[in-house]
Image (spheres, rainbow, N blue to C red):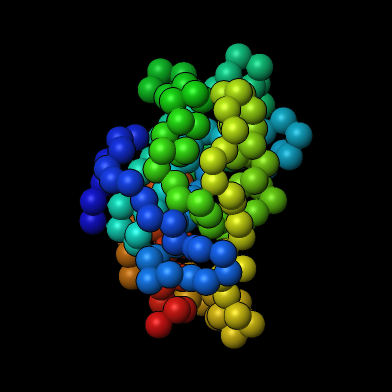
Length: 182
């Protein structure tokens, strides 16, 4: 497993070209957020899994106008707001890193939430995303969609990683997709 905290490791080759999936493993992204409120929440952590093994993650320093905070969400992801203000990267740094690292398409499992947080991040950074976010469901056939929840649970057990950290969740997405694509 290759891990770099917020550093450029290599130039990604697009996982998807048109409607044809190449031999590359798709890129996966996950966000943790201040809450699940789709009006006032904001991203607090972004995590990527590229080519099934290259992991990247960033804690995101909240903008001054981002005031929402849920104690119950904090209990789930374990990230304290003070940790973000002290150790988080600014939104411009994270948005630029995502644009550098991600291929043309990146996949997530909670499209409504992830797209909201992705666009909230990029709006705050005043930068346009240079990639398209898609639901992992577009990569799956009916059988795979049906098998996804059980396959995901098997992957979580096999990897032994805590969930609700963005990098871990992106890795779980990638491994679940790989398991169902054999």
